[in-house]
Length: 213
Ligand code: URA
Image 1 (tube, rainbow, N blue to C red):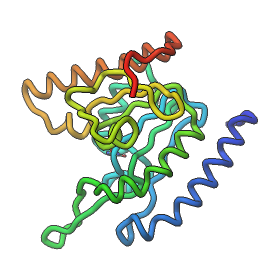
Image 2 (image 1 turned 180 degrees about the vertical axis):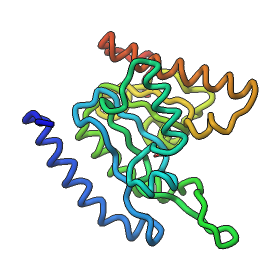
Image 3 (image 1 turned 60 degrees about the horizontal axis):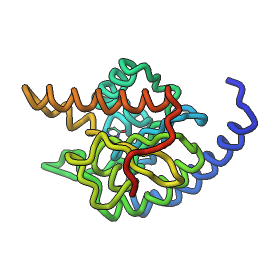
Image 4 (image 1 turned 90 degrees about the horizontal axis):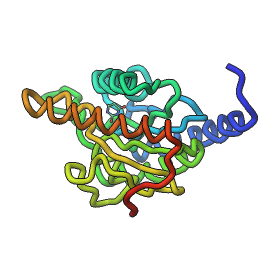
């Protein structure tokens, strides 16, 4: 696809940042667990930030391509948003793992990992310069909105984020996938409503968030 001047500048800046970020891998990633970089449109109006890559993401070297990604893609589509028009990335850029009975399994990222990647995440978002950032889960919301962000209480509300970008947080799709019965019904309904808010804000070119940090 042909890139505009703005996009080729963004492409160069993103490549430079990615190359520079490789230098953080030995310090911030377990041996053998590579960088999984963001992907999507460099001209995206919406950036989605998740927590960290899982095993499928690591295998394919792409964010949100496992079961959580499938749920995210489906709900984006239902709200009239196309993944390819969005920038999708993670707060932590390599898969956090632990060993249990000689098996390598996912774990939550540590504060050290989240802090270690935070400057990279901010630079990445600065290059994309989206109108809206959607934080998928508490790790992303705490990295972007506020350290003590309370997801259950504060999801679905607009905040004034870095670089004046409107930011909203929702449940992490992997969390929704772990719910059953009424909890599933409740969380998926709220997730749909949060994504719809993003779609509507983009459609209406809304500028004013209703809450500020
Ligand atoms: N969960 C995340 O937070 N990010 C991914 O890329 C995949 C699963």
